[in-house]
Image 1 (cartoon, one colour):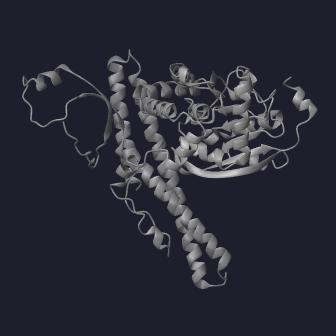
Image 2 (image 1 turned 135 degrees about the horizontal axis):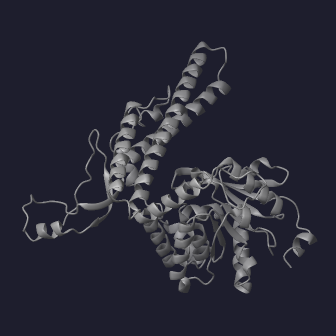
Image 3 (image 1 turned 90 degrees about the horizontal axis):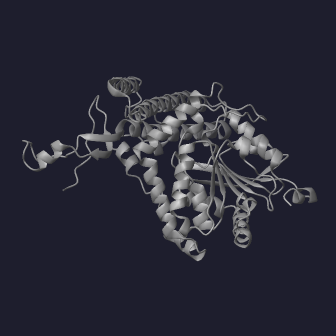
Length: 464
C-alpha cells in the first residue's frame, strides 16, 4: 500500500474525489492473480464520489475575484476622498478603477452562477442514485446529467471563468501575486483544519470545565455526516420535495401559513466551526454573561422546558451550535429546523451521547415563524439566526416576529445584517460585531443585537 498523487484533470476531464468503493469479484480475482493486470494499480471500480477539481477551481477563482474587487473598491474610495477632483491623472485612475470594478463584479456573479449550476447538476445525480427503481431510465438520466455537467464546464471555460488571469487593480502591488494557478484548487482542498482548537482556547475551555473529548467526538461525527454521500443525497431529495411543494417562494411578512412556502435557495448548507462560535460569545460581554447565567439557571432548575428555550437556534441544521453550547457552555438549548433529515440526524447523535450530556439540547422539526417561541421566558433569551441563505420574505418575517415577541434585554446573533435588525434603531441596538471563518466565507461578520427597553412587571408575569 502506498499513497499516490492526486491526478491533475486535463482539458475536458473532471476530477472525482472518491468517497466510497464497493469490493467486486473482479477485484478479488485480480488480487489472487486469476486475471491479468498491470501493477501497480488502484483497485475499485464500483465507486461513489463527488466532483472536486472543477468546483474547487471555480471556488478559488470566486474568492480571488472577490478580494480583487474589494481592493479596487477601496482604492476607488481613496481616490475620490483624498485626491483633487480636478486632477487629470486622478480622473483617469478613477475611470479605470470603475471599469475594472464593474468587470470584476460581473465576473464574480458569472462565477457564482456557474458554481450554482454545477451544484444543481450534482444534486440531481445524488437524488437519482437514491431511487432504487430507476432502472435503465435512471442510467439514461445519469448519462444525461454527465453530458449537462460537461457542457456546463465547457460554457464556464468559454466564458473565461477557468482562466488564470484576473485583472489587476492599477498601482496596487499587493494584487500582483494574486493570479490563480493550477495549484489553487488543491490548496483550497488542503487548507487548515476548520475544527482545530488552538492551545490558548483549549486552556480556557479546560478552565471552564468544558468536555473537550466529547466536543471533539461530536464535531468529528458531524463532519463525517456532512461529507457522507448518502446523507447529501437525502438532503438534496428533501430540499427538492419541499421546494416542489412550494409554489410561492418565501412567506409574506407578518403571516404564518399552515404550509411553509420556501424556495430551494433557503436550504443552502454551511457550517460554523466551534472556534468561531466561541469567539462570537467571547467578544460580546453581554452574550457571555447571558450564556453563563443560563448555565447557572439550568443547573438549578433543569427539566423546565422554558429554561432550555433560553438559548435557541433558528435553522439549527444538524445541531452544530446546540452541541457546541451543551459541551462547552453547559447550556441546553432548542433548535428549530424545517428539514427532517437534519433533525433526525441531530436526534440520532443526541441519543448516542446522552450519557455525556448533563443537559441535552432539544431538536424540533418545524417552521420558526410558526413554532419559534421567545415569549414566556424567566430571563431574556439568546436567539442565534442562521440567516445567511434566507430569502428576503423569510428575513422580514423573522424580523417582525422577534421585534414583536422578544422582551427587553433579549439578544440575537445574526450572520451579517441578516434579518435587518440593524435597521430597527427604535427597538434594537447592535452591541457587538465579530469577524471569523465559516465554511462559505473566511471573513464572515457576526452581529449581536439587544432588544432595547427595560423589563416590566407585565414581562415578568408572562411566564409565571
